[in-house]
Amino acid sequence: MRLLLTLCIVAFLCVPIETRGQVPTLDAEKQVEAIFSAVTQERAPGLAVLVRRDGRTLFEKGYGVRELRKRAKIDLHTNFRLASFTKQFTAIAVMLLVRDGKLRYEQTLTELFPDFPSYGEPITVRNLLNHTGGLPDYEDLMDVEQKAKGTIWSPEHQIQDDEVLSLLKKETKGKFAPGTSWSYSNSGFVVLGLIVAKTSNLTYGDFLRERIFSPLHMDHTIVYQRGKNEAVNRAYGHSKDGQVLKETDQSSTSATLGDGGVYSNLEDLGKWDDALRNHTLLTTEEMNPAIIPAKLADGSVTHWPAEPNDDNLHPGKPVSYGFGWFLDPYEGHARMWHTGSTMGFRTVIERFTGDKLSIIILCNRTDLDPETLALRTADVYLGLKQKE
Image (cartoon, rainbow, N blue to C red; front, side, top):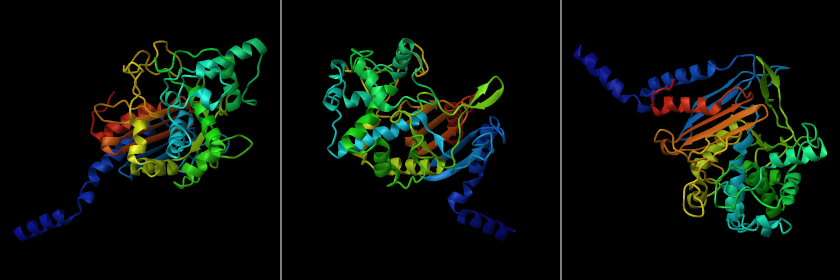
């Protein structure tokens, strides 16, 4: 009996630690499965979720359908519009051009666009990257223009990047002097996309393909432009109309690029996560500016604006933002993260850098909250108490 017991103990000790750790991993998978199955239905639009730790996939699954016509299932190859998740790609594109010596962080709008009005003279590329530039919101400018002239833009006739720049050039002042405040700016990232194109002598989409997507073998990730290319295995966006989900895939602002024009899927975004972890595109030193929280010109910390709006997530509260990344910690865990929200889609990437844990959720319906779902998932893998 003692010999049998000894042999059992020896056998257990000889089992690789990774195998012995499978029991809590399976338990975590069950908990995460419960989180997502509770908010999705098999024949309705849904989401795709990827959880990785230190380059290993812990959980990956699609829930629901890409669209309501043929009801093709969502899987790791389904392409979603990333919306503002795109901003990290725009930021990296700018940083690559800085590394190439073709652009400087302190270059101003009037240096880059000599016909830009004088209020752009002190606005730098750095200000645009960290949302301290104070450019007017182009959607507000669209409203003013259409009140004066009637309907100009629609889902069928969408505003283009050069039209955004033209609207900004008609203004005589920004929302605030650059460096004196912080305000999330889609206008700034549309302009950054135009700067990438102007500086590289490529289109924004071609630059991202040549310098980011192709080197990383993100073969199904594109800067989508209707009529010019197609997102394969594409999910279509949906929104609630009463209790019914209806397709709401495009709006009048869905064609702008640098602020939200990328489509991608879990398979490719896993490669993106690897590239960030391994510093494949930029060295640790070159990447550092992106993960240093912005401060105002007087050295004070940045805050969300006091006035609530769709792009103001936490009115009046402190905000930590680098270049294309929010940097606020979560329950004491360092992280870099970003959400995306647009007509029919909600997305999030959460990278808990100290824990080497990454969570990506892509939704093709707007009544889901991927940020909350991601943090509930993080609670499981970080060993934190589940919140009600």
